[in-house]
Image (cartoon, one colour):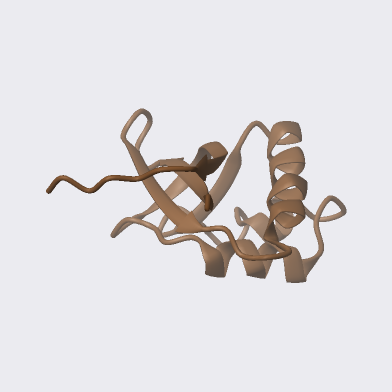
Length: 103
């Protein structure tokens, strides 16, 4: 049996990357695809945490491309480092067929 994951890499400080992996739940794949399409248009810009400001946040950047519900869902589904991040470097969908934990 295979397991599906989404792996998101964010840029925290112009080249300092953090990657997180989450279980992909039923119905989420299309949501991630829509987010990824919008990110391509805006070159990955997605300020979160201390990197987001009153005039620089995903709700303003993606107005007309994503609904507020989609933005809130993505914000809630992604963790972020202590000070946040300014952009999404990549979103990958992984299918793991076999996994062996050796430590």
